[in-house]
Length: 303
Image (tube, rainbow, N blue to C red):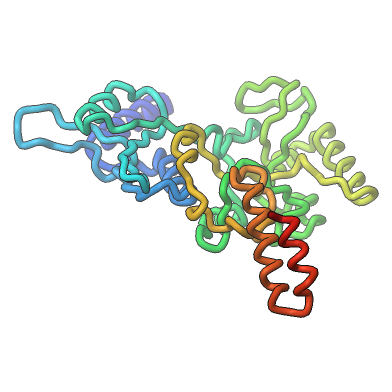
């Protein structure tokens, strides 16, 4: 009978074997899929997932090429290879040379999703995150790094239910007591993402008091509860591609503020022009009605 360490070694060997021949195993595929959807959301070009082609063979005796996880044909006709995770510079260099200078980009989806230090298990994306992130056409989130504040943004649970820990996805991000005994090493002066249900299960007074105080402040002055949250997936390393996004490729361009999520405007490089286009649209609509003279004056001011 195999012990835990023997089982772990056997699993690693099996993973290495499958990864050399087949698409990514289920345990490591989630990162690539998040990047795939992120590339589609960012509208950077035509995305070709290469996850099914771990090796590109040749009919001669040359070494097979190891492709990146994704190839992108940008709208200006160039080709970009996207590799998820570092440490593959040599194979990326060979692939780039074979395609005569194909640009290679290494991306990371840092700590998404993170592990809960208390139980040691990875946190899961909640239904709202999945629905928002997958709704590419109607919910054009241009650049997602902000948090979902569960008390204020959730449509599945009432604030009172979230506070009682009924939502299995809600994360607590804040201070905890140094009496907490996490399964992974932490620095108590640093805030981590914990399952809020784990916080309630261990009845940590510091964390529960922090939540209670923030909720009281919300009820009295309307200030947000910021320690109960959920994150959208995000990817780092695509800055050079995102610089190529043009105005006509942004779905909400010309509709200031963004009709889906006003936070998008904070990241849009066409913001000032977008404001003018939106105002111009309103003025042109008024020109058809009773406010013709007033609209003409606004039109002169705008230009």
